[in-house]
Amino acid sequence: MLQLTNIKAGYGNIQALKDISLNVPEGKIVSLIGANGAGKTTTMRSITGTLKATSGDILFDGQSIKGLAPHQIVKRGISLVPEGRQILQGMTVLENLEMGAYQRRDGEVQDDLEKIFQQFPILKERMSQLGGTLSGGQQQMLAIGRAIMARPKLLLLDEPSMGLAPLVVQEIFEVIQKVAKTGTTIMLVEQNAKKALSIADYAYVMETGQIVLEGPANEVANDPRVLDAYLGGSKKK
Image 1: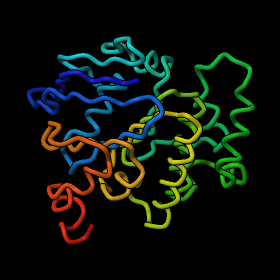
Image 2 (image 1 turned 135 degrees about the horizontal axis):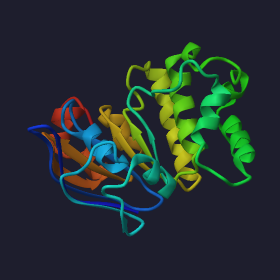
Image 3 (image 1 turned 180 degrees about the vertical axis):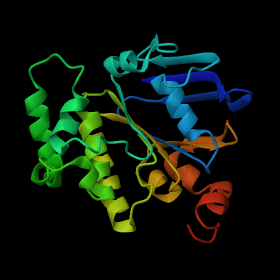
Image 4 (image 1 turned 90 degrees about the horizontal axis):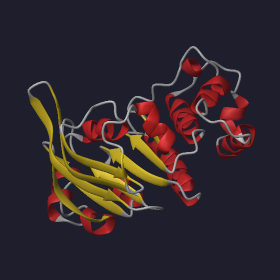
């Protein structure tokens, strides 16, 4: 569904991505893990068009999206849940969700809204509440719900566990799995390697702007390099 080939991107004279190539097959969860500053968010920004790749190509459903504006990429079927959630804090839960569907012109927005409320009952309870007054976990659910309202074929999640308590992280990852079961393809960028690898089908490991390891998620999780760097050492499988 998504194919990055030899992507380079950066900020001024800093080259953050160095010939990145990766694939996200339809109907799968693909995780991209790595330390802070590895280039994970830059990869997401390149896919969504908020940062222009300087070379290489990005194909979505077989067509190049490199160089398209972010709103055009959303229209093609890619939605992002950004790092830090970035909900509209001065708007209600309902208004945030409706904003997710702002580009849609079909008559099924209300039906999808009801599905979101079934999936996230707490959002229905709080739908008249301002987004900024929600807890961190509730805001993350709202950010995911808002992205789903665009009816994406591919959902990009950038650090969904950031700043959340362990029990809330568990709940968010259960939500991600439920979304995947509806047929939505997911690319997950995450520092919590253990959680990311536990739900992914395939995984890539990124260091200093390069892919250094890839494979089925269960194999990556048992690679000695990953165990030592991200999972607390080879004796703690």
